[in-house]
Image 1 (spheres, each protein chain N blue to C red):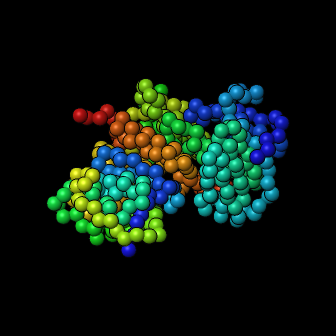
Image 2 (cartoon, rainbow over the protein chains, first blue to last red):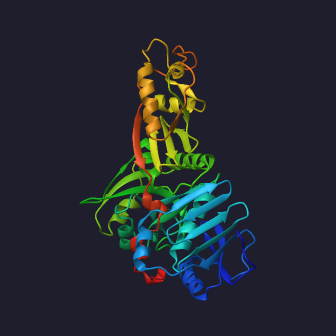
Image 3 (cartoon, chains in turn green, cyan):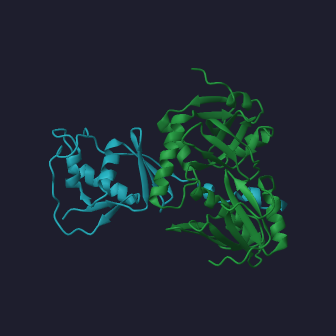
Length: 274
Length: 134
């Protein structure tokens, strides 16, 4: 992987991790910059610890091919410090030790989205990426609302625009001291907000709003499939399993049946009755 | 000749509470095992036959080599164990030689695919969205 000399670009911060994005294509650079606007740091030069990403425009493709690409999982592999992503229309490669990556593909934002998500899954060694919406009670507490596609994450975020800080992917970090912290991410309608995590709700549609506390085993079974696991090595995935077990031990996990009405917030933010 | 099995290199696992939770990076699936099943998986860090795995279980409780062999085959089907070319006969060990797990046929408790969309960009949020360039 060859990273050319510094090109114009910008820096952003996701869940405490900093990245720089550079591209020779001004139109694409503007598009990506707009995509991550809320998460941008001041203009370059970027912080020295930032992960450098070089973006190169590939060939134009037909919209039907793009739709197909977005609906099919792309390949992710990791060998030693090399992380590779391959879609039908895009490719990315990262060196996790050198903290550099390149991505090429059609001039849309999804190749960069895909790379950033995978990089975060590997770089976040004190936390997890969870397929979830994030709801905040100011800066006081945060609630993760997770579940498989169609369970209502985007619906919930749309119902609660004041509280919503993400509607698809959330970072949860578990520092050695202090409470777990939840971070909004720009996938898709995310805001750069963070707050101590007060609970995880696993969503399902229901005629009325009601929640039930899950025991640790049930919580694990339902949360684990919604984690974006690193592509390897085994030790890194095992460490994330430890973090997931720690998370479930530290915050309550609920099954939440809800109907699409803003009153669901009262259920989510209710104090737990002992 | 008896089949031997070794834990697959692409499997991450942890004992969490009473369960052993496995992430199969090759098949993109998660599997939960009961305590006996977790002990079998753990012991298969080195190649083991069903006969050798008998030693995990408490003596006198009726541990069944056939049930262990079937369980190992099930884990192999799930990609958690790798069957190895066999070069020797089974070495049956006595129950209780190493461990004291009460006997019960080891079981797979649950089996879930990793959410495919977690690894993917949500198409509805991208397609037709001018902010994504479409």
